Length: 336
Ligand SMILES: [Zn+2]
Ligand SMILES: [Zn+2]
Image 1 (cartoon, rainbow, N blue to C red):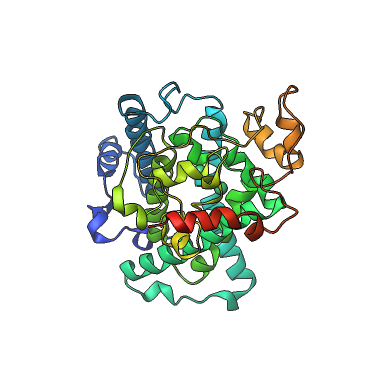
Image 2 (tube, rainbow, N blue to C red):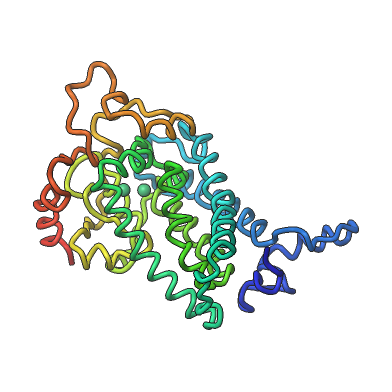
């Protein structure tokens, strides 16, 4: 698919021609007489990175101050197998699908090839891709809350009643296809370096773990620019205005720009999840099939009558902007 040369990381991250940190594995294989040319080293590097950040955030949740002290640290929380399945399926499998989609489209419609980005310096490619994807992810996230159809997909993520770092993997396949295949596809067609995608994927993984970990931490005034755990936990709040805010992925500048920024220094929501939804499926298949079921089917029998089938209780009969206006005005008043 790609030569080693085109997949190589930039010099600053490379060591002996291998992605940083896995030269040891190559040396072990070579000493055992195994050739390693056929090994997708970038994928191996990402797996190693994944295991390291899992360990790091597990220790932070165990040893650091927790937001919910009574909760078990990840990854062995309720439904963790489904979260692990989502990580595997939405990571390596969808990145493979992205490659196949890009190659297939170029074979089918060669005119789509616009290899402009391939000749740009690596740092420029990364910066353009990072900012463009972050902007698109902000609006796609808002759309998932505003559209009743897309909310059925995004509801899988918000139905988590206990958050751990692994909650960042808890997504419906339909939403993962939009975020990890549809959004980066035009950049692949434009010749984006695979190593840009790889570095972005690693940063995205660590950022997601940080935003969802049951670990009380603060980045202070950097909240004005970065979508932090402090902000994202409010996005998962079960009630209050914070749950209609903080749609940013890496950057909070979009939230500040478009009036959805919410930050209470040192404060965290008391409950996370979806109001009234207490019996959401714990298996990957159950969560996948949940898109065809209403909120009412995930309530305990003794709960009161259903609220509107909507984005976390926001009435979908009203446009998002209207239903969230009061919250947004309040947010803007609080925004620094
Ligand atoms: Zn959301
Ligand atoms: Zn989240």
